[in-house]
Amino acid sequence: MGRIVLNRDRCKACYLCMDACPNKVLEADTTVNALGYYPVKVNSEKQCVGCAMCAKVCPDIAIEKVYR
Amino acid sequence: MEQLVYSKPESIKDDFKISFCPGCDHGIAAKLVAEVLDELNVREKTIGIASVGCSVFSYDFFNVDIVESPHGRSLAVATGVKRSKPDKVVFTYQGDGDLASIGIGETIHSMTRGEKVTAICINNTTYGMTGGQAGPTTLLGQITTTTTKGRDPEIAGYPIKICELLKELEGTAFVARVSVDTPAAIMNAKKCIKKAFEAQLKGLGTGFVEILATCPTNWKMTPQEAHERVRNEMAQVFKPGIYKDKVSEAE
Image (cartoon, rainbow over all chains, first blue to last red; front, side):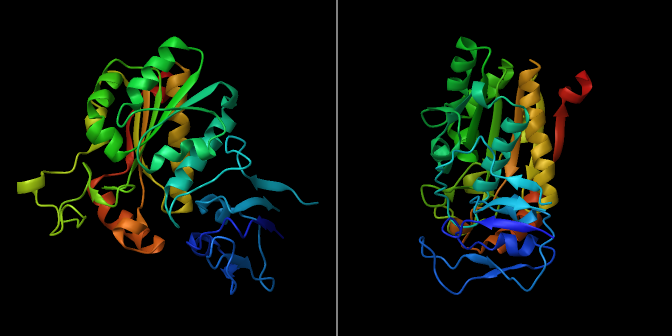
């Protein structure tokens, strides 16, 4: 059981986190953020394990905290 | 009970601004440097040297004192800072154009003198900020705005292999080339960056890490395709690995 704290207005939609996530918990949002990108969002139906891989690969530090 | 397993490094400002293009590896590299400064607990006494290029924005996110240097002269400025404040931790954060082309004289001489500083070089095979011109590390056949038919060695020469060049210098204590294209590579890169700082802290000489990075905008690729290129093209020419490690030898 894990949880990420995502700042959606920092995301620039490179989606590197989506590739890194082992459970494919992250997906693209359908509404734009303050920067004009479609940021990632957490798919609540899938289970985050709190491995923090998404936070490690995020170049924009949009994933600020990971809890497990 | 929830446990915090990852949080933004303290060496990144709270109101940081990362103005790189989407998917640029600069963000990952900068974050690794910040994490290492946190782990070594030296943030309060660190002075960073920002160079010219995309890396110029260091002062927007690093939560340390930053000196801006003229183009290519980062290691010369670092020499001055370190010699006047020997108790400080000094690092430069440069691109390949800055470190290996315009500033290669400063790079070679400061490392020959064995200045106790750390140099981090982001190698993305192009001049990213100015619009994707050919740089010193541009691969043969690579199309840039100044090599429109691909880099031809007859006209533009060969790419400089920075690590192979700098490992021969007596003054360098740690020389490594890493990539940040996968989570495993990122963790390895962090270990190497930490050793490059330890080389300085132990007074062994210059620590140097070259990071193979992407420039999705100027390569005209998605971030994912750009990472494929790092693996399939760049890593074939610029072999990742530890080229010199006096830090482990000293232990």
